[in-house]
Length: 210
Image (cartoon, rainbow, N blue to C red; front, side, top):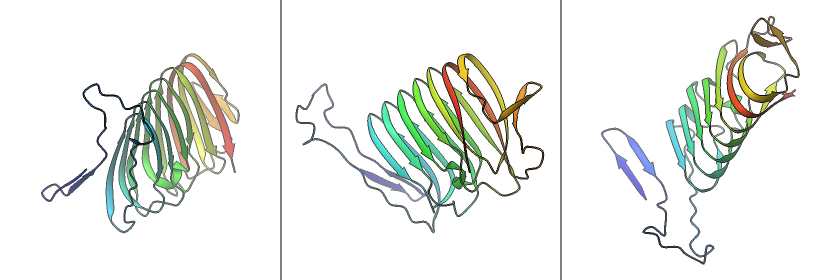
């Protein structure tokens, strides 16, 4: 399924679910659906992705992304940005439900802001990569029941504002100053991340990556 609006310059591509009307297919392999989509790295893109039940493997490296939105329901999703974005991204939004989400090198998206909102989720948020040099980027995380693993680059200064309820928080490499937590290089770094984290009923793990 594909449609294009010349007025809005918006392209919609997707796969419609089979077995509607309460009809179930016993032969799942026969009715399995798959979409492979390639985008031109030369064309600036405002990208919105939505996934239902299933598996998604998304590679966004080397594209020209002005902003990105990802919505995922009950699925297993991997999002990687293996090469730096060709332009500066305004915002990268992740909205997830009951999901196993793994990200790789989100710093390469070169976004001014990353937002994650999750329900019952297991999330690996990999914030390594090539951030906007000399800028302070913001990461907003709000999760319910589940676990979050934060993979942080040692070369970037990090400030974390954490609000939690019944959550185990591994603050390795972060020291507390007043209400917030800081990496040891916060005062000397020109490239920084401000992380606002809100979590309930789960675990937060911190991993530092060279």
